[in-house]
Image (cartoon, rainbow, N blue to C red; front, side, top):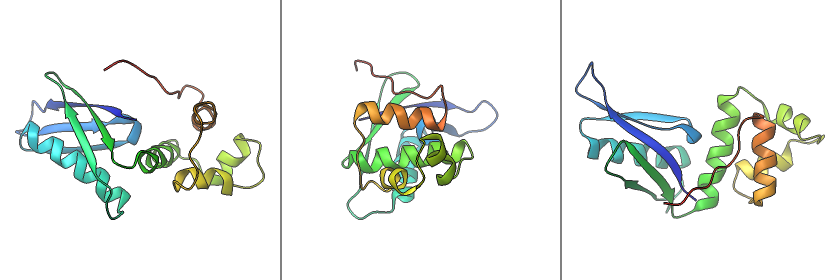
Length: 138
């Protein structure tokens, strides 16, 4: 599983800005190459788990993708960051999922459970009705 991002030169400064919208992460670098290193580092710092490693695949344009050696951990980060970006608590997500306990959803955010594709779609819709996985050929 990989997440798309974009990188561009800031017109008002010397920095390259870089973001991965599904992870709600943005940072910058003094060069495009440095920006790629910075986004990988930002994700790894957020995960803060020994052995977790992010890889960035750059393209010729402004798009790139990020993946990791532990996909379930990266997926868990995405679910947590999207919930937080939409200002939702675990209880609110549980309510939207028609569950009395937030623990089931929390297990996905902790990487203790890995959702099926159907369940992932359901979880994302609980966060926001317009969120959904999009698959494309590389």
